[in-house]
Amino acid sequence: MANQLLYGFVQLKDLANRRVTEVGVQVVNDAINAAVAEHNRQMDTILALFAERTTQFKERFTSPVVARLQPLDENGRARPIKPFGVYDVAYPLQDAGTAWGATYKAREKMSVQEANDITATLISADIRWMRDHILAALFANVDWTFNDPMHGALTIHGLANGDAIKYVIQAGADDGLVDDHYLGQAAGVADATNPFPTIYSELVEHPENSGEVLSFIPTNIKSDVQSLTTFYPTRDPNITAGSGVSELTGSLGVALPSGPASLLGYDASGVWIAEWKTLPDNRIVSLTTGGARPLKMREDETESLRGFKKVAERNDHPFYESQYLRSAGFGGNNRVGAVVTEISDSSYDVPTGYESPMP
Amino acid sequence: MADISLVTANKVEIVESFEQMTLPTAEAVNPGQAARLDASTGKFTKGNDSSATEEGIYGIATGGVANVAGQPVTAVRHGVLDGYDLSGLDYWDPVYLSSTDGALADAPGDYSDVIIGRVIPGTSTTLGTAYDKLLLVDIPLRGA
Image 1 (tube, chains in turn purple, green):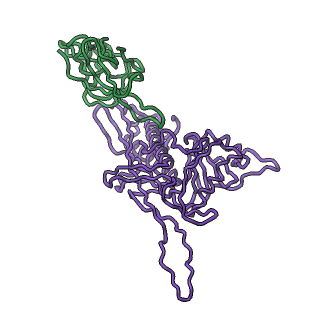
Image 2: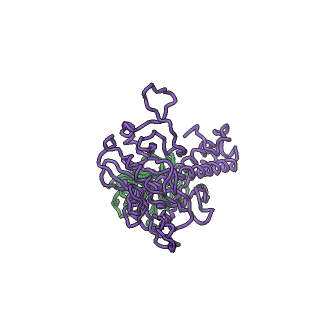
Image 3: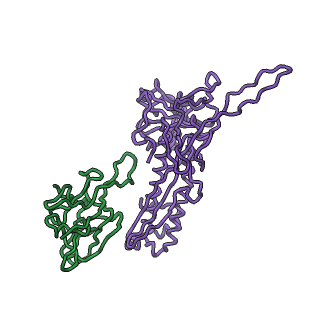
């Protein structure tokens, strides 16, 4: 972590080895606050692909309805129709925090670099918590109950899981049907068992979804995916391809959040493929870049309780603590807006450690 | 009964302290050792589970360096400490005062059962990693 400075600490680069008390406690506090604010802004980028923000605890998701003109004659008039379908969705609100503490002497001796490094650790703890909760919400193929202290028992959905809710499916027909976006295939990834055509179909058959189809793959299947004859890697600027070699010329059109994922290439079935190193083995998470997001992130109605922020100092000389808090929760929104595929298992299972509720 | 060792010799860190006292020592009382009050000097000295007098400990010494007799040490009576090798114990298992002078143990000592604390989890670990094990210290009022 040494020699890497967070956003708020860049202007203190030349003072990294100086003590906080020399540079000024308020100056360093301002740097910490700026770093945390930039972290919250970057979290918006990560969230933009997966979740929309809300302060609602429960909503009705409006989905398209299969409507067609009614046949009429000279005397006829159409009857009013329901312009959209609805299904109920709800979101949890969970608290989590972290803290760092030091004795009076340790604080007096702390350098700007050390303050930067501590802040980076706290921010990384928040990134992990958010990542784990986003993934748990996507992996949840069984509804679970969140007991909200204000609003009572809330049923939290994941993606479409074969329950009674019907979705418009435009695949050979144009009808409302039940659907299941938790898939499993017994075989590994290979040309004969390429999961991406199915993933593509499952997402684009729903009018709620639009844009490009993007799949995040775990590292353990990366080489198998790259070995598909239908896979085209992103261009390497250091290499010029020879004649007769097909090259990927298109682009994804959206920026991937820096850190979690790196774009690998494109499968000819129409799926962009990115590696997400911290995805659990054998789980592919896919979504579209347009349309309603598969999840919503609920935050508190009170603005001061949103985001990741320092909320308190807890001082009991010689011990001094800074407490940080995040209040948020994730639940299904557009329940056909993503697909989770388990490889090497014909029956989908929630990955170990990602059971809901996620702590 | 097995004495509980430290992960790093002479290093016990305070995670939380609700009640503590800092006194010079009548004999070396190193971090991690049980400390009682010397009746005549009012300084810390080591305690153990061998008699009513010896088992009347105040708290557990903390710090990062070995103590020298006469130098002060802070003993925590009620709080959370980090630095013991608790890998052989389960969460909420009791930790006892040992018959060995100054030591803590995983089973009662020779004189009586003095539970000085219990194993609790530290939850700041990544998904799939077992929680850390910390020592919740809550010393009962004992002694002659």
